[in-house]
Image (tube, rainbow, N blue to C red):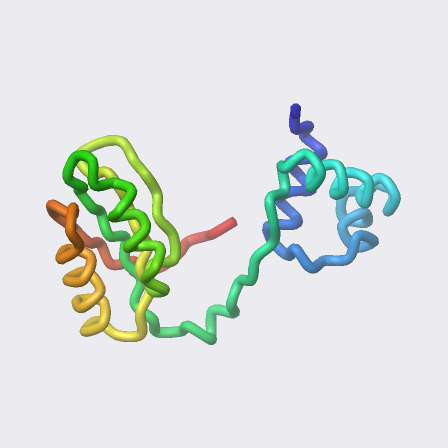
Length: 143
């Protein structure tokens, strides 16, 4: 399915606040409420919108340590490593990447000590050859 420029604008607004009313979104896009509702339904039906999620207010996790954890995986061990990482609630996202690493995980924990423990647990997984971490100092923007 082709995504139009209007669809992209709609998706951008939903990324900001998926609970925004259709009327509010319509006002911001300068479209009718019916048009916006139809587009949302079409995007859902065609699988473009795969679901909705919860974003926690920054103050709830204020002070938590976030880190990009780059992971090198031994050949033929990828699926087992991915499943083990999926089972760790501290791992918020996992990306397969090109380059010297195979995966990049986003870890989030309350303290530096817990981040150290998380990276040690990841490094100890069967199939993980090496990890390298970068602590996130600040987020300039997120969509």
